[in-house]
Image (cartoon, rainbow, N blue to C red):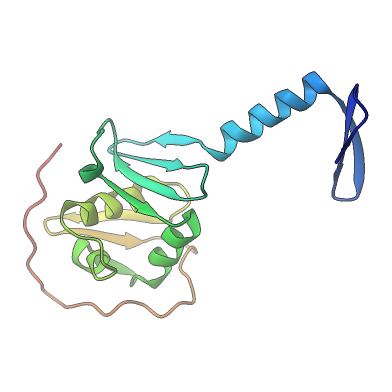
Length: 154
């Protein structure tokens, strides 16, 4: 990228583009917005932060007790890839996620379009992978017929 005072020369994929300062400022704002996007789903929300982290939270909640911060969206995707075809909140908790956050993350998997997953049982809360988003990473071990506390309806 170079600037001559009136315009900005930007090279993308080997192609050079000349932008006015106003257009470059608009592009910068659009990129910043896209990189820090927050998407709300039915019960959860996902937010891409400027530092590259990804936050799963309860929709409309403001406290940190209602959020789980991942190093990146890819870290969340890797967690999903390690889970078995059908998994409970307890299996999510084996990665170190505690309390009600494990249910929130499981719900987020079911709501976010990047994860081919659906809620298969409410008690205990269980999700099932439904598509081809399953990773080659080895699955987390599961305990059959484990009883979990009931998840209250929102």
